[in-house]
Length: 442
Image 1 (cartoon, rainbow, N blue to C red):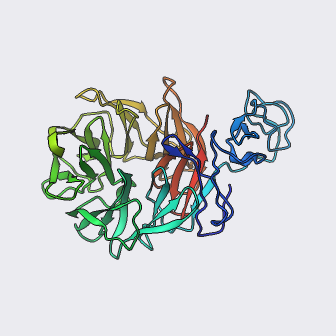
Image 2: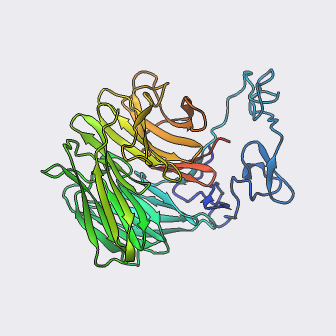
Image 3: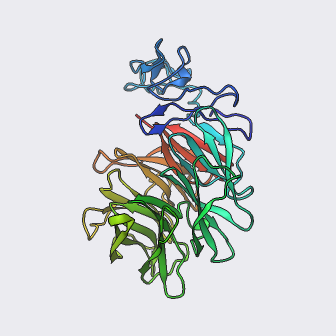
């Protein structure tokens, strides 16, 4: 695992399409435009390309032919193509010295880091437990700037970037006094954030790492906050006009809600969804939202789909690219968790269990955060570990029917938010106070 001394920024990138890739560099002053990408690299420096490729004289990564020399001193031939541990081709099975840690520490020395977000220019990192600040880490040049800082008792409990703004949920752990604030992505602590909503009773940060979601509909921001139920069993989302004037509506989801730790808000296919618990079962509460004329927002329907979620509560929600389907992850009361697919093209959602156990090697764990790329679903797990069980980072191939989860990496502690940034998976590690990345499998 590559890293640098605390607490400096460690990432720069190459711009790729709408994404970015992350790379460690020695110092802030020496940052250059590099990146683990097929677009740009440093001739003669193999570390600036993905595994399995080399940097050509023209500064572009090219495939090395798939014949890896391996990292260990193993004997015998490997199986298949790719990088091996032995001296043969492919993934050698000789007795080597073991594979190096494939991850990169992107940001280090940020106590309690849980919430992260990214755009085409920067990674935004929230220090949720101590400094209560959101920092912008430039992905080219390496500059680190404080965007905003919350004063006690508020802590950052949700963070998103959309339409040129950083939007965050400031949570007051002791009162129903939560606030949604926003600043341009170029803003600093010298700028006053605008208040999009206040007086909220959002779910506490302990309920999940994605208590806030955002989508632009027409000329309006649509903010979804996972709210704790009030006395009449209501959870709600908040709609706020982007211009910050005139519109401040609430959508209510009414049901037999018994879990004060609602979490996992999601927009997908025009649906506003919040995951939580209904009586003793995990459930998804949904509302259809569509853009109207002159920035108005139409709100239609209210559905609490009956689904094979099992006992417990929903811990994470994600939509596929194009908003065709959504996936809901659960944490069961007895341990473990499920993965359920919902069709966003059908008003009944056609819920179906995809995985009865999301981590076959650690069945007591459940999903806490996930991201969908179209071809793959990536997720991180946590739970009350039994015996040799480990938390992990997993991949579920969406192109193969009945695919089995592939464990990409064992994690020593709980993970925060999980993002895809260019060709990398990027996630927060609150216990270690850092953000790490891993090149996505090819």
